[in-house]
Image 1 (cartoon, rainbow, N blue to C red):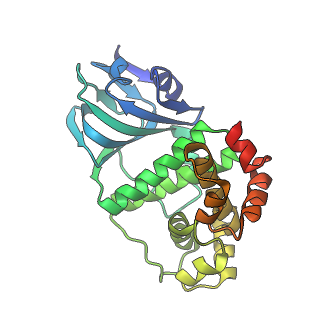
Image 2: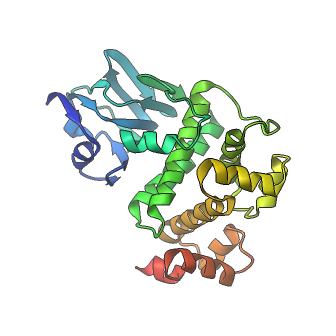
Image 3: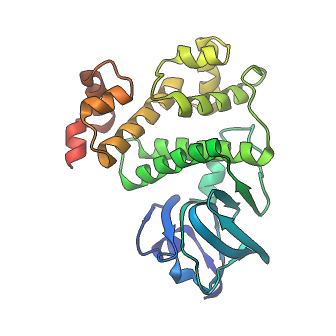
Length: 288
């Protein structure tokens, strides 16, 4: 298995468990056990890879450079880099998000503020606590979207991948978003996405996000629409729906508790919202 070239489906198909994938995106709950098919393997992968180590240590070579990832480290690698795995994998646990190259680049084109090439080959980043929490929230949303088929699956995945690109871009360039800078609609869109992922559970109205950026709701709505082709409410509702699906499928919370957690006025309002998106009630979704 020397110097093979793996596409996304070929790589994902070799993972015996903990892998969810389609033609564009793969989510893998990796361990030394389900990566053992790659022990001693030297290969090129023609997709973008985002690796977050949750526990233990992951060691390998990338383009001849020894890479050691410890818990809390994030590894980002572009397509067609030579990766060599050791003969024996150490005990570890990691989340792998793999994205087909053409799809990744297509999603990225929605935002001209993101550098065309954040990194030429690969980059290792050590995340702080708040960055780690933000990334974990994102990869949990990716995992759930891969596990369940949603009515708006395609749109949901594009939004999630785009948010990941924003996160990586900010981490790698070292730039911080400045809410008072209103000179570019693209920057306003980026700020909105960051705010939305932080507050979407509590705040469902355009006014809140406009106030945080010191702009009018009309201007925010127009900027988001012009940059992304989607509305502010569409983004917020997509995030709410995805979180509702996560809680319905992976927690024992009652429908009322989920409604309260997502700040709906009452359980009926939440149920109506969910049924409109999913085509079924929350109870039916949980029981299927």
